[in-house]
Length: 365
Ligand code: COI
Image (cartoon, rainbow, N blue to C red; front, side):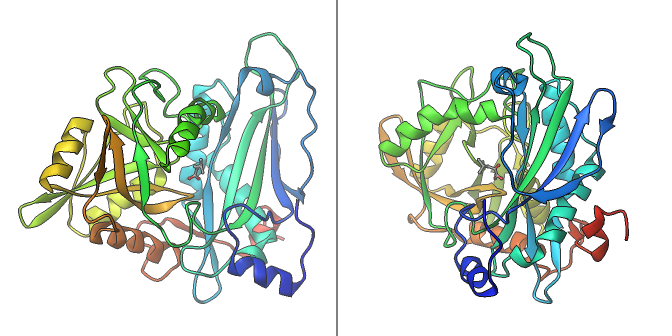
């Protein structure tokens, strides 16, 4: 945990926060049990979670999480980005794992209460944010295989640069023919802890081979591209003089990324041709060879929008475009960050401004 910091220490941290290196030292906590339902959010000093070693969440994996951000605008105001949408996604993840579903408004209030308490921890640099990590975990001790009758949602907060670095350096990715991340009907769409654990071995092997990330293929035929371990993926195709932006559809095996959704909306706002469609890894290879596939980028809350410059697949290492960042990648990232930092109007109602009332859990003074 972090101790209370002096103004000078905090200023130094906010200049170079890294990703989740320093916590604010507070958490927001909301509890649920079958008898009393959801508690009101409480902002508390950071403390260990004390759990019985027989806790259901530890043995049978009832644990889901979110990642969302608060941004500072030039006038000093602080805004959460799409907190209710993140709350709805957490509830959907929870439902898939037979866990209690927190109302999105309660989730948003809990996040806002924490951000209000930790406002001085929100950095102001373009692309920087206060990253919130809400975890919902089963807390009842029992080794019988059944849904828990109690849960805790604990929300952590960290000043953060984008998780792959402030400079959005291009990533290298590789595919796997040995392992898969998800199959239809499984938990692939859910942000459950186990999905991330299931990808770790392959991701670690990829990193040992010099790649940053795994580009997962579909679980059945291992031919269609799906997503990275930490982010969704987009392709930018040359279509005559126009660009066409595509991304795999959300049909049960990929995370319903809110950055993904925001980019699709912003691209449509700009009149770009966009499509949610499947693409095979063979079509990706062919497109890279011909130059028709001009850009590949990854996106997610933690990473924002990052170019992919190298793809290792089928024994071949291919360079995307000229190996740097393409113009569409930069355009879409800046369109998103401009909304998040209040530089352009929030025409979709994505920002929740933090007010004095949030310091009381959104219930007024
Ligand atoms: C996020 O982007 O917020 C995520 O939850 C991905 C995480 C593995 C860094």
